[in-house]
Image (cartoon, rainbow, N blue to C red; front, side, top):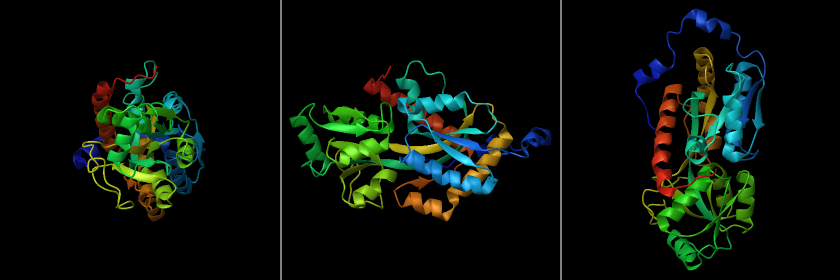
Length: 325
């Protein structure tokens, strides 16, 4: 969960007091277009966050900030691409929660989330919402679990791809509830949502950023929110704990990472403008209306958050025994 860290820790990690000589080479940054790499298809929640941010940063810096989608392998393709990029501030990653899980699920990664990147800012966090297709008779979580137990292996859940937050949320539900449901991975949120809305898959854990508008329109039926408290945007929908599965909290989040070795002065410049962008009323309104918590936190806070997420998923995945290669 998001935490507020001591100001002293933040100040120490922000590189305050960096000598002027070290900052001088970055005085003109950026002097050319900056690439924001997204490991998912266009149209999903991470892509939405990246494009909202790109517009603000382009206006602030006077240089193009171009969103490039490099989907595949649970966003690992994009992560490796940025990890291997020059640490000059011109290739940045708009990361999502699966980046902190990948090291436990893939054997041969050539990067490490804690060692291959410089944190810039945690941008936003959004809970997962369990929704079912409108042709599913279950109206509540207990009814859905009862249906699954009566038809082992027959019901399905869609996700944005192997190793993603939605995939792991579904595996958690199988593990906690003792049910057998079939995982259907897609290459992004768009495909998973399309087949949920058409009834081709039974259920999906949808990020609230993409779920709330569709659920309010009645295109799928919300069953429960994987959060500690109900969403104001869906006040009638219980939490997973209220619905009978305690301790079931799954957050999707987005953050900006730079390649390891990027100048502290560049990181500081980026963070300052990212914080302003995420605090902009139109950005906050767009994201908060869809159930997101806007953060815009400092590099030290994001580094601590990543460390805590890695520890959390390490413990959890050991109980589920999931490996993808």
